[in-house]
Length: 419
Ligand code: NAD
Image 1: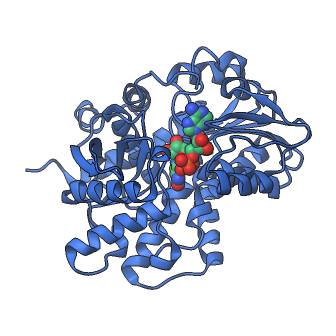
Image 2: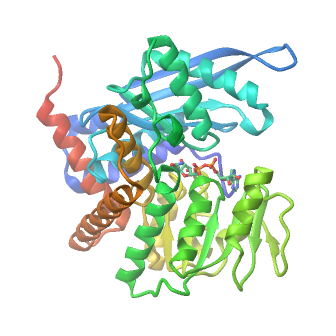
């Protein structure tokens, strides 16, 4: 990774400060919006398969709930820390506001490498963490979802745990569940689908043909693999992808369905081989010349150290916070068009919102209805950010922040400060 030691929360605050300045936001409102409203830290024991007891640390942070209940994923990763969770919670607030769904922002995380746990250890860890943060979560107040290191099965255990406590099934307490237990059709693909929709819209704006465009993707989990698949279906050529095992590059194009099938079997691309593939490091991968670069792994991948060497025309942020504010300035000067995370990866929370609504109504929609609604929201959000960007001659990130922060500020102001 380019640099995983930068403080994501400082970056998030910096992005907010720049937008607040541009919006000429009232200083008292700035003080309210630049910090999270509520934070819970937990240390909890889990019985391991060998009978030993280990203690894990985790967090749930709610940034702002002026526009509705808190919403945000749960991450299982060894590099989780409170500042990362704060940053992710703040970005969720802006993202929900940007696509105009009635949520505030939250995030959760546990410091753990889930690939080192057995299924039963993962289940016990999830059930205990769900219990620890159950004082905050609920269908009407804080609704988690999957993020790095968690998936539909983890969401199902979480939902079951909360339901056991309540004594009845509460499907709307979490999203990203398998469809068999109240999940939504289209949710697994939603984030990657959204990334590819905005990539297509941005390419149209830039006069870049999406058919035949070369694409490089960092991260091959939920977001990265679906983005690769969707981009290829649109006719683009995915020439490089990477995951924790490193990068896989073939200028003539990769066999994405085969690589997806391989990761399903082996949990990562480690050991994947095919004719014409060149192995590259994750840092080298980011610097490959291409039309579209989509970082879909973790934060702080494009920094002031490597931004000058990025050689794409369009950068679409599938991951949260992959670009630091310093790198943003360099990319802007180089004329690289950046579709920011709060817009590019908002497809996930949008279909999570659909799942929550379906769960509350106990009435489920068809996949076609869901994909059409997602398409409309992503396209409309892209257009409103682009309009703001062109009007103020700023980057797409600033354009997106201006739309989102203004909405949250307005809601906070209209509700007033209690008491
Ligand atoms: P995931 O756990 O499914 O996949 C993460 C991928 O990143 C894996 O392929 C992993 O091997 C790779 N990775 C991890 N460490 C790496 C490293 N050091 N170098 C290169 N690759 C590395 O997670 P995901 O759900 O796909 O999330 C990826 C990003 O997208 C995160 O920033 C997340 O916050 C964001 N996001 C996810 C969703 C969602 O719906 N899942 C929605 C919005 C944003």
